[in-house]
Length: 152
Image (tube, rainbow, N blue to C red; front, top):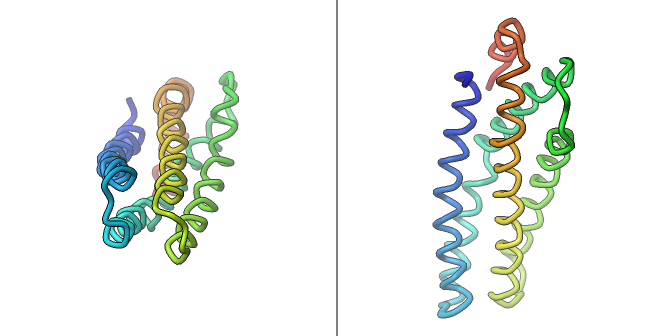
């Protein structure tokens, strides 16, 4: 597998670890929460999923996706949806930030974050099992060099 794809996979692995910690906190919040402290911690943990590293990761994936679209590869619908998913995650990040200042019940906040996590894992799964293998198979060395020049 191409070194850039391996870098993207490594990022996914790091995010999966963070999400696992968030899921543990969500489980606690739903069942035995000290709401104020747990919500503060939850939003601090979520912030780590919406920073510059996440933005650059999505920009890098988009470089690969756009190059892939110029090939003769049979493009799966999930690959076509990646850009839309990335935009949606940006909107969701904004929505999650607004939740921080609300007076919603802890359970409502936890359910909203849980839904985000399910979508995020589904997105990563389609990238790793459909998009990355397709890019690895179809992109030429010249295309990878061009992607490397633009890489964040």
